Length: 110
Length: 113
Image 1 (cartoon, rainbow over the protein chains, first blue to last red):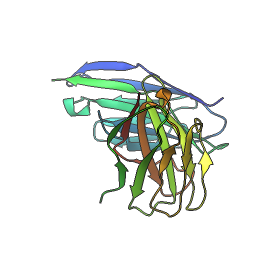
Image 2 (cartoon, rainbow over the protein chains, first blue to last red; image 1 turned 90 degrees about the vertical axis):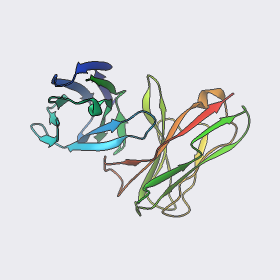
Image 3 (cartoon, each protein chain N blue to C red; image 1 turned 180 degrees about the horizontal axis):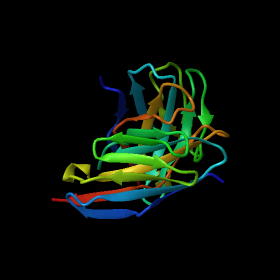
């Protein structure tokens, strides 16, 4: 069964304190792994797509990496505006549908 | 551009009543989706449509129906609401089927009493 698990559930950081969010997955044929950001009361917003192990993508203070079993979202020197819930999703080659993890809620304090 | 527009933003509904959540996109995307988001369960796919005139069942389709008469509109209907359908509902679209880059609406918060 295709499955996505994110950890930790919640993360509190001080401004400038770098850290990483984890997304572990099991899927029958990975078509792609996707990261989204969701602000309170809003819909998810697409961030990155990763297709194969070893691939990396960057956007401002965020960098996403991918291995055969997991993905990391590295946050370098975060700012309070980076506070949000970060969602990971995978698409399998069998179904083509997205399976979402439960998310990591990040709070960055000034 | 507006992207995905959902209505209503929130609604309180008596159990047993019917309700249609509206979703309109202005991006001319082929694929559209309905998800529900519940605390502890994440986003779960209810129904999807790969192109106008076709629909398919997702992970949790029971109690819901959809139609896709044209490219832009993808309404979700609850024929007889039950309290377990209390949730936040998100409509999304993508250029084509199988892509993971989805564009989401702002959500419709539904409470069934």
